Image (cartoon, rainbow, N blue to C red; front, side, top):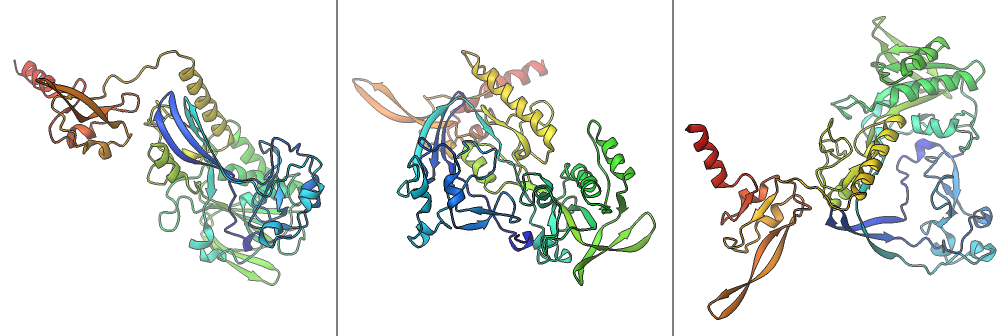
Length: 460
């Protein structure tokens, strides 16, 4: 068993990354880098012989360091495709040119150590962004909780894997330090959430309910187990959520309204010091295991993906929707949709609902033979355009491109460059009209002549 606190920086290895995004709604050209997996998936049957024989074991990213995986492995049981890849950073064949057992035992000869990265380009009608979330790195900002040096201070996601029947412990709740069953488990909510000083200002939404579930599991799975929950507020906005929370209280979970100020070691246990604001006094709880409900933050690299695809993020780094009420699954870039926690903290029902909404939006988009676009877009007067293209870097949607036109001057034909607006990309923000030095770009419906005519009509 590997103590989770000893591996706070374990990161998932991705084997496909978006390299480039071009085009517009209905006609996106996307280049994807398919990293070398060292396994030919056209031959592999996923029989499992290779990883059963692999002698190398390293901490599992999926189990957050609570368990081990092999150097050739399937990331998680429901992975698609359900076929293995080789972790070249830890495989002995790549690090020391030894071993090679997986290639020898593979019955179909699917292991290929010479496989290289491959760039795949294809056209797509729409893009759905579903980058998920990461956990707030509480070890950096919350030194009072041990800076991650106490192995028995874990996060809710660690507890989730531990209590899962297919997890590293087979569903048994244990202390990572010594593998024993804890009796007193303390849950600390809002670690990194709703904390302007050291964390994030927003509520992570899912923490109250999964903490109630975890408290219920402690009392259900551990004979005589006790659950203590330190909380600021209990937010149970959802169907049957309040009833489930009240059920955990009725089963014996002790909810203490207050913040935890310090976690200290006391022998082989942990001393949790906090406040009970309802009683107005300090409290101390001796715990065998402490579970932190850490904040949900944007997935690493999601801001770079947003810049690559061409949409914006909010102040917290989550993907920005076009409108929080009227267009919650759309971005300001036409043809790009959002699903799940990439748009903000969500629980499973909300994630499923938003993913279904995004799928329906894509279906409605691709089911039509013609696309309907906003009528208020920019247009270029080619006769006035000087071709300076100052407007092109100003456009946040990359809708302006250079275009060569031919003009006749007497008997001669002269070619010159002018700006051209791609109406499939333009969102009518008007930034280019302000930047244009020659005044050649106007927003359709808002030209100078039209605005003057409106003013004259009002004054008459």
